Amino acid sequence: MAVGTILLFGFTIRKFEDTKKKPKAFVPPKGCVFRTVMGEESSALSSEYKTPEKVQLSLDRGLTWIVGAQNQNGGWGAGSHSRQDITDPHEVSADPATTAMVSMALLRSGTSLTAGKYSQQLKKGLNYLMQATENSQGSSHNITDVTGTQIQTKLGENIDVILTAQFFSNMLDHVDHDASLKARIQKNLNTCVSKIQKAQDSNGNMAGAGWAGVLQSSFATNALESAQTKGADVDEKKLDQSREAQKYNYDAKTGDVKTEKGAGVMLYSVSGSARASAKEARKVEEALSKAKRDGSLAESAPATPENLQKIGFDRDDAMKYSTAYEVYNAAKVQAQREDVMDGFGSNGGEEFLSYLQTGESMVIGKDNAWKKWYDDISGRMLKIQNNDGSWNGHHCITSPVFCTATSLLILSINNDIEKLTAIGN
Image (cartoon, rainbow, N blue to C red; front, side):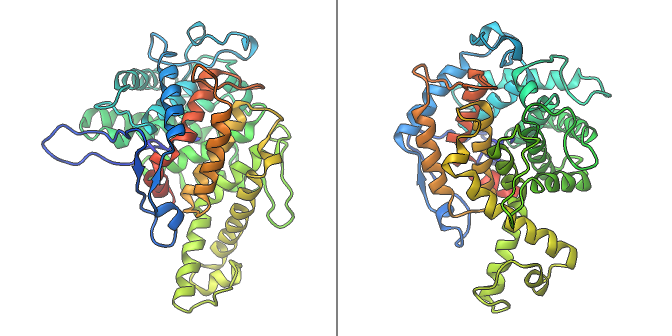
């Protein structure tokens, strides 16, 4: 994912070249033009895209605010669910989930350990997360003893290890200059992957769900997908179960949405369904396009199981991939409906996370509609930014640190086009 993409979620555009010179990370200047590698059939993604000046100014303000929110121990915190009245970031304890989100935002915005304005803050965040992972009990599903945080209460008690795994996957693209550090991060990533998989039930959902537990399970899917691209010890069966659990929340044929694991909010479920099905939907789209070009299928042929079998999918895969294609294309539309985007009725961290998942799913799927999504969501996010450069939620996850980190990940998603696209390969 982009610099990460992170996450939910991975994240950065370029790997260091193997030269004798000191490696330099990609640091996007203001108004930078990003060129992607989407291929001729995804023109909206493969064309140059210039970060709007207003968006860049918003990113700069948000980054300035969030680096000032770092705690002495190198972490960042969201605060406890029981004391959401405490909004000063220095009056709350650090937690891995929030630290991972902020660290991924720094990566996606162009900072690395060797270059960038905030390299020291990123280094401290990385050290905090490695120590948390290495000091965790092997029998535990999580990497922290801190409980009752806003993020755990609303997403699930194992969200810390999930987001940390996503960060470690993203970080691996930035440590080619230090073999021992890279090996240490890889080991920590495997530790997190093992914990995530132990916490999955037989249906692929994560144990310890919170108020909107569907998001915890969805981000677990994202983390496992990203970790797999980095050679981590991911159980393919566990990953497949995780994807299927998310797709099951949305019925593309009837439009029915299962929201019981998503606090009754359609947005949380459909954004997860779109994200979980994006990789498989892209495979279908690419196979169909090739078959239509070479005359194996008619130009108007739909992605039915029968047509997929005609072009080389076996029977089981044809059914699975056809369903993923239907779910993705229907869920992404639902996730962008204005009434659905309103989520719980006001902006909360869960809404921001859902927007992030929708955008990342479209990039992973090499979706031509990505540019319109970005224009729409950036306009929405800029309108609700606070005067001090932060964002905060108005229900549930209200933490300005967590909400600002997620907002930065949304607005800088174009920095991670190549990384997110690679997840879908």
